Image (cartoon, rainbow, N blue to C red; front, side, top):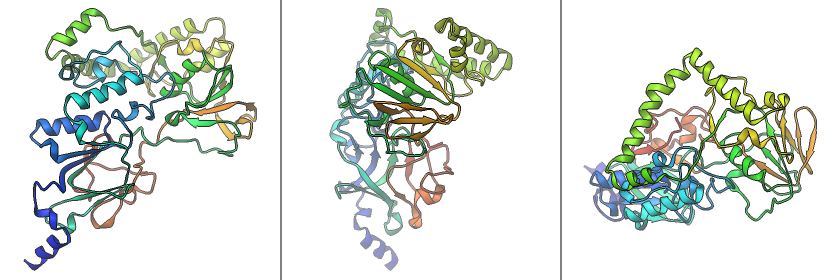
Length: 418
């Protein structure tokens, strides 16, 4: 009995269930995963005033918010908007086109939060500096979240909805920081840098890179694309939302959920079996080869450099229009060095073959560190998540169903790292 009193004294608010000082749930991140988590909790009976969302930015949307990691030229979702945007009919919104751009997605996230009454529960411009499990000193499992402003928020459950696309990853090359001109990651795009007429180097050929490349080609004086591995890029055939589809979204109850369910069933039941069938995969690969030949006519060497040497969908396939055709433009150069960029110099970059390219600006489109949490998370017994998973880079992430972590009670991951 005395032991219980000591624990309660260390954390006296632990036993006051429903006390405003202790939230039922703190959600880190007000992107779609965080907003949907809050919505699902409310739908299941958790009071909205017992939920707090902590958001580092000034608006909702996570990746897609203005100033977020997806705020770069050409940024758009490569999944059809009618399936990607959640709760369309509940919010009462119809996307403007099949694949919508960053600004519309970010605006929709704010609209969703406002329509569902979540905005008053979001603490904007609030960065988390640490999260610690303090339940061993309390009568119930509690988490303590500390913000960079020094504020402390306590809760019974902590949800990590900060997403895997939040920590930019730079290449480990010689001379990083040597370049005398502007250089930035796509996730931290510097809109104050004018690239019109400039020699711009884009390092990388992933999803963000492809969108930047096809956009810069119409702006920069010359765009150099530094490629280690070529990619399969399928056309999106983007178009404005047809009237018939618009009417169905606006008036047919359950229509968008039906669309999402049918697409998931098609991928699982039809597409994946075809991809894993060597004969069928070869047919799909041949169709892609025909597309490359169609978009890059009369230049066999360029087609060879743009053609992957691995089966279709062995790596993530890009959905983007006119990707291969972009390299036909006289102001776009593909630097296809398998060793990639190995050094940043004062005037540009050097590739593995030894050739140096002089540039006016460098854009790193080199992805994200999906296994990094940007603040320390301490679980039971003072053990940090980094220690539990094998170092600062979280080399050995282990979870139950990608959601729960042993030794971190009531900590829930919305997206990954597995």
